[in-house]
Length: 229
Image 1 (cartoon, rainbow, N blue to C red):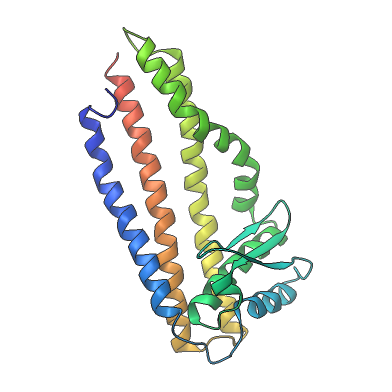
Image 2 (cartoon, rainbow, N blue to C red):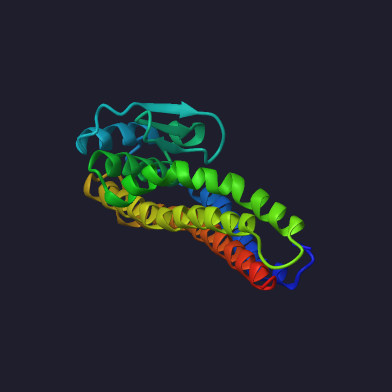
């Protein structure tokens, strides 16, 4: 019933956006990973220098397997760079390394949206895990009208959507910080900055697509619930 109802078609634009975002980030990363930065710095060297300059010199920079698996872990205070970024000397490598460094500096400087997101993560994690099972159970076991389980599922998923929405300014700010520090520290020149910005813009689009998908799912749940009134 959930997949057979007309609201399923609401997902099509969001799915197309997600596919476009994924293709764009891979294509942009592939293109600019072949353009070497004149500074000759690796992603790891750039991250280490930027962390030291930003006052977060205690944050270790570690290599992690995979492609585009780069992340900053605020719980362990460690910055992890994928192999291609850690050892890479390209515009893509430096842009991504600076972006993840931006997250570390957000944490160091107590950036409010990041603090909220980190504190809200356990609630959002529970919401994304239990929301759909509870909603489905409520949908299947209630013959008339919306059930309390459906409402609980919607509330839990709304928490996950809120987490996704709050993630957007966190990611945008990290990219803005990345471009600024790469330029002010002289790690990339003006033309190179444009390339790094394209890589980060493509990556940001994946978060926009994910948030759009989450919002559409929430709208679907609300519409299905409304149809049971």
